[in-house]
Amino acid sequence: MTSIAPPLLPAERLSRYDGWRGRLAVEPRLQRLYAWLAPVVITLLAAILRLWNLGNPHTLVFDETYYVKDAWSQWNLGYAATWPEGADARFAAGETDIFTTAASFVVHPPLGKYLIGAGMAIFGPGSSFGWRIAAAVFGTACVLVLFFLAKALTDSGVFASVASLLLAIDGLGIVMSRVALLDIFLTFFVLLAFWFTVLDRRRHLDRLATAVVRRSRGDDRPAWGVILWNRPWIIAAGAAAGAATAVKWSGVWVLAGIGLYLVVTDALERRRLGVTFWPVDAVRQGAASFLLLVPVAFMVYLGSWIGWLTTDGGYDRHAADASPATGIFSWVPLSLQSLWHYHETIYTSMTGMSSPHSYMSPAWIWPLLWRPTSMYAGSATDGENGCTGGAAGCLEILYSMPNPLLWYASIAALIYLIYRFVVARDWRYAVVLVAIAATWLPWLMYPERTIFQFYTIVMWPFLLLALTFALRDVAGPARAPTDRRLAGQRVVMVFLGFAVALSIFWYPLWSATQVPYDFYRLHNWMPGWI
Image 1 (cartoon, rainbow, N blue to C red):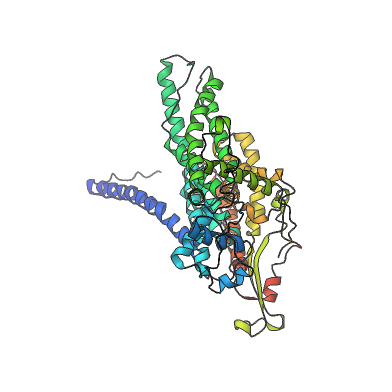
Image 2: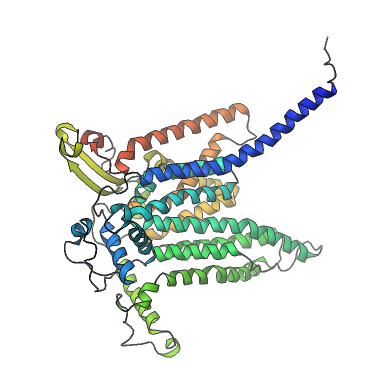
């Protein structure tokens, strides 16, 4: 016989209602707390891993020999200057003012070197911490921007936390933030450009749909859409892509990729909204997007050359004086004509750059992680500098090695994401794939160039986004049965646990920490590693 519960007294009803209302009030507060606490904690972790022992080794490592000295002479003179023989050792010993006034030929634009120079101006050019602090700050900022980008893509704090955490603890991100090279600055501005593009997408498509519906006036298929100019995030994306190009020329491919994405996305949306002449309509909007995106990028890029333009000693600074342009280009100032001549020289030099190097790695082999780059290696005998490595001695090494589990899993996730995009046509997958294509595929056109595995730092955050998408699918959708969700979440947690453990195992080799030689040998998993 079924028993019937007695009716609740008014006081009991009120008590239950208050408890239910209290839970509803607490949950949003917890969500708001997590929304700002998660990125703060992850960014602080990234900062600790990048700033700890940053000044070690106190020597110019790998290509720091170019960028640090060029940055300091550029900071003082407005252009990169030459240095005397043996300048590396003298610079590390504190002789930082021995640069000449003779111009040095450099192949990369000035912005990244200005950022390095700013750190040196604040902390002193004789401080190896000062050489690298700008890279560490921007590398830490990459983790935060990746969180915001992932959050904008999915509106999921958990998804964004996983993606940014993976970058925070990964070796490639850590090492490239601990050396005064240009690539981490390039990575930051590329991430910023794609984040701004995603922010524009939501705003633009909503406004486009509203405008088309109003214009249709009840008709099922309006002939024309509208041209939208009020898109501040596109202007911001153009500025970020211009800054990326002002660090390294490879940033221009990102600008092109974003432009192509904007045009295709807009065209597909106009077709979906039923605009009759959507291809021509998309071209009209594409022209407007070009004017919003490209001119600001060009102005930011040109602005990075202000030191070269306003001084007289830079390389090729007066190349156009003897033979100025005639005809329709005669109005261009001689300084800009000389800058164009300098760019022609840079392009010729970069396309023919094919000096053999023991760590060179062509772009087609990057997915295999065949030859990561050692930035620095120093040895010590037993008892020297606190070494307790026994007869084999100790090593300090700065090795731009990504977490191998994350790397290979990300390559597999990229293949999976391509499949998922073909099946689902999800715009979020398209953003990630465009970013990877813009930062990897152009390098395949230069198989003869001397390039390195660490160039992948620019595409690495987007590979981690692909991996995070795959992990989310493994965890299962919210509507999946409870058993399926629990099993998937356990797999993801185990994977993340192994990733953290591997990062701990590899961190000494990512931070130039002195380790016994036998510990170092435990990391020689493949012939091309170290």
